[in-house]
Amino acid sequence: MTITEFLEARIAEDEAVARFQVQRMTQPADGGSFDLVESDEYSTIDITPARVLAECAAKRKILALEICNACEVEYQPCDHRNGTLSALSAVYVSHPDYLEGWAL
Image 1 (cartoon, one colour):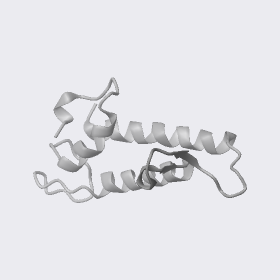
Image 2 (tube, one colour):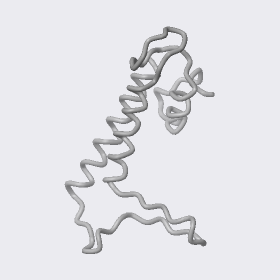
Image 3 (cartoon, one colour):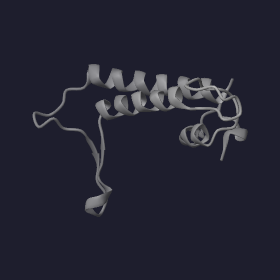
């Protein structure tokens, strides 16, 4: 499995969970979200299925726009070491398919 294939699979999993949440969730009248509130005003994290779906779309755009300097192939993800792809994959470091070679 390549890092690109790994990321595409994780994005698809995240997207599927978010879509499932949208289907089964009834939001409060104020448009509500899942808020994780800590001790100060800067630690509130607004995690909604819509935000997760937007992040999935953004990650797919990043994958599609990566340019490999080694191949000089534009807009086609490849398997050469790439800092952007390594950074994106870092959030999935605990996944059993994650390979240590993908770390920055």
